[in-house]
Amino acid sequence: MKYNKILVVGGIGSGKTTLAKKLSKILNIKHYELDNIAYKTRDIWVKSDYPERKKKLNRIFKRKTWILEGFYSTPWTHSVYKKADLVIILDVKKTKAKIRVFKRFLKRKLLMKKNKKINKSLKGMIKIIKHINLERYEKKIKRIKRVAKKHSKKYIILKDKKEIKEFIKKLK
Image: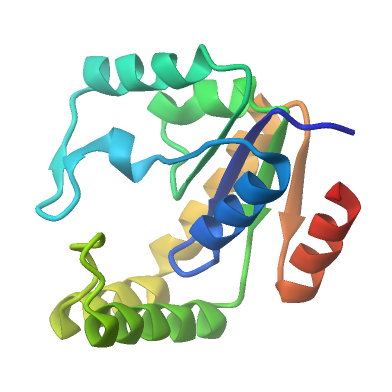
């Protein structure tokens, strides 16, 4: 089946951006980060108001194809779940997510990536890793699954690299 509108959701460090970029390249579809819709500027985390978020989403929805990714299941994103041909939920183990967050921090810090102003401080990275340990992190993953079940036509849950590779293989 051909997917033109894809939502990739999952926790911090689950591989959402990596998968969205891979899918974007394979399917030749532009991808967007929900954080860039939710926030005016990510380096200081100033939230966009609801009308601004809706306006940004509507610009994307006008496209025939899109890939959106993020860690959202709140009402302002329900339209994304509804409009997506496929919702991909990444539900990786907490230990794997923490390792990925740490590696991402090192990569950004050591390579001094100029395009990413976020997740470069040790304090910030530790805060993210602590957040992964919280019970509400797991509750958020459960809520994502409930929202997908309620609002999307089709969704899949991928738990590890092997399942992701198999899914990508089927797409090609």
